[in-house]
View 1 (cartoon, rainbow, N blue to C red):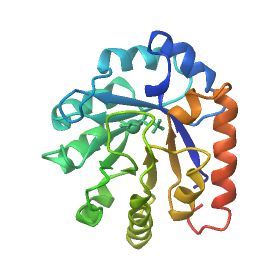
View 2 (tube, rainbow, N blue to C red):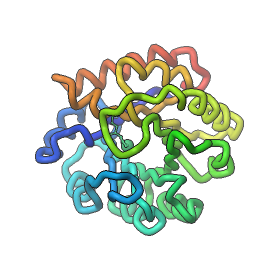
View 3 (tube, rainbow, N blue to C red):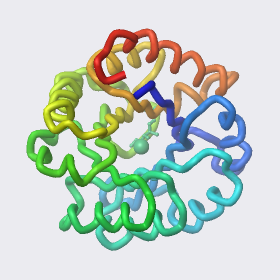
View 4 (cartoon, protein in one colour):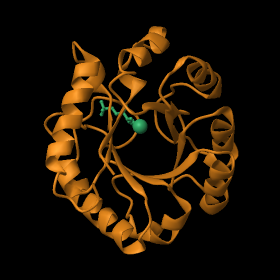
Length: 226
Ligand code: DX5
Ligand code: ZN
């Protein structure tokens, strides 16, 4: 699959979310929406009412990343509301198979998120249940953190697991993805790139998205999954 860019509105202006989504609408593939509940991560952002409002105004599909303690209870509602993709965290889900199936049944792409310290191999048996794996390349909770190079071997191993499974699972990286790090991620096997501060701290967010995409495309031109 060609590389896709999903700008995170965590670094956008929360008083003008609709307008900030529109700024990247012609350049990006998705809008990444970080839902944080102050329990799974030490930060509180937004929930379903704000997602519902964004769904009405956004021209891009929403890529909802749920960093919440009880995704089994809350995730299906994001899919039912119309999110294009819903990510639940492996560390939080108690019934991931049931919840991932509920997300798919509601018409969204189902995705499993994995923190930097969590092994991906544990979840190999779930590859048939997901449309995307999200590998965190920072500890979740905040934008603008430094990219963790230690996750790159896991990106490679995840790409190999996906290859072995023969499933069309996208591989997303999230955290510290920028002009300095996106090529390393792409070479390791990622094909969906979340970027918050690298997009919204730029003078021209749409241009930042286009540049990131060009870098990812160049880095994966010869890859067997691109
Ligand atoms: C962090 C969030 C990320 C965050 C990325 O927990 O999941 O989506 O917005 O921000 P940057 O790209 O600035 O690291
Ligand atoms: Zn995120």
